[in-house]
Length: 118
Length: 114
Image: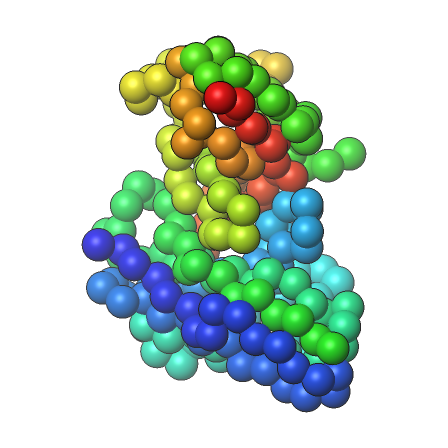
């Protein structure tokens, strides 16, 4: 149990376009989803936290108008990178926590989406 | 100072060796501690939680020293398949509601050589 999927697994796009990444909890209801970004040889950096049905909470330095997060249901959150630029190229990973899933603080990670902006 | 600091390595060890990773955290109010493993170009996966009393899972032993704000991971009889990046992860506080944030260290890279 506790499987999280992401789609797409990788995407290449032109500079200036927008890219939507989906994160789904397949077998549990995700009350909270987290979006992370990881640059090569660096740590995962939390971008934002979203609770179902409410606005996402963004970390300092993350532009909410550029990284649009929607957590419309208990099984789906989306991250849209608007007007992507080469510096947005990164590995984007979501994680989810649900009621009664795993230990108190455990998060279940999606497989990640590798974004390359040309 | 980073919230969670790890020696980045890389650690290159022969098969069968014992290797230890260390991690320090800055927030004394941190409540939960974990070691995750991340393979190249993959998502992190929970290896084990870390408890004050220390805990062991097969070849892996984790220790927590709250007074020194220090966490360790010991891998005995290392296998080729242990090659990965090991992430020290801390839950820095207990917030209200259901959100539980994790702070990741930058990871320690391990390569087990044949």
